[in-house]
Picture 1 (cartoon, rainbow, N blue to C red):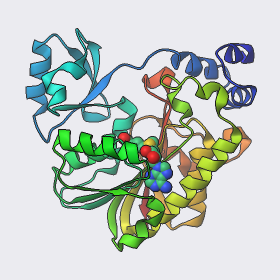
Picture 2: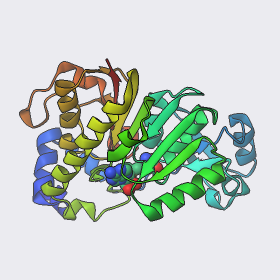
Picture 3: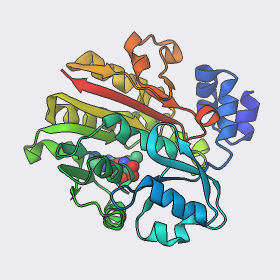
Picture 4: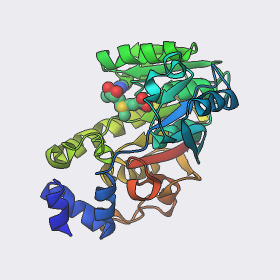
Length: 309
Ligand code: SAM
């Protein structure tokens, strides 16, 4: 079994870790990540209704099935030609988005008129979904440190007709300097990306435990800042596309142990790991959720929803 993971290109460290976490399933997860993900898209209801767009695409021969956790999300089952060359795509009636990525904005449940922060926004996939759920009303402060990625974000938001978002080129570690209290916060954290091997196969071999530790440190600092500027009673959704418990369950357990917060239940995905590497975590950690390539046909993904008490 470990031999198979090595032959797929995984380093010894990560192959052994995955075997310890998931046993034989580790191979099924790894094999699923060798296959390309289905192409999924989100209907941009700022510009068109679900019914109208699905009709237009069906007429051109596209077929798709619903994403269970996102009302506006669909995955293509028949793509007669690239959907990105359609006028529908080019005029911003839809956004190409991986299915698991659609869940954090849905889980945050932002309302029109609220003040929301997106602490790591580029290229804007989740920001634009937040804007859509808010009907372009209220305000989103969207941070990112990547200059090129922010240019792409600006183009995406403008193509999609998002007008309630302020883009900030800077670290969300300085979010407190805005002097704003937020109704809701999305932290789609920078991470090692080990759940996205489909797109980045080199990560099987070149990631190290130092990378995991580095990301964990940044994730904890960002969470601490986010909780500082969140209103009491406000909600923070934390997500990563990492498989590593150090970037997921351990970070959330640290928050539960050190801040006045509670985890809120989420309906989709599998319960988070209760005892990763033999470390027993709080029972409520299972309210956080994982999406798996072998079961959900998505990237490896983690989502937790916190309320500040
Ligand atoms: N939420 C985005 C989306 O759905 O399109 C994807 C975000 S990606 C997982 C993480 C982002 O965090 C990267 O774009 C990276 O540039 C950004 N980042 C890294 N450190 C940051 C920091 N200190 N403050 C804000 N953004 C940061």
